[in-house]
Length: 130
Image (cartoon, rainbow, N blue to C red; front, side, top):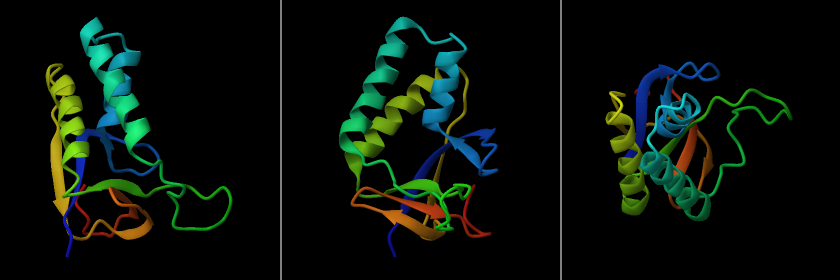
């Protein structure tokens, strides 16, 4: 089975009830005005890199209803070294502001609702790490 990787902080996402990912956590730091100018530049560079190098999943819901609540979580495939390296850049920014980052690994990310060559979006199983 393939290993999937997710970078998280302790803050919970109100929609999924699971731990937030690094994009949400970094955006929160930027919104609160605590990032230095060079950190804002680094954060935006990472965001732009992902916009160019990672598809946005077209589905986050287990349901096919038009306005179903999206609770799927994004996981990287373990062999996506460039994407994981960029996440490490975000991790460094967050940890510089005492935001602890955990790296979760699993072979069972959940019920997969979206997949491409770099990632899956999966509705978590009860035993999926969070």
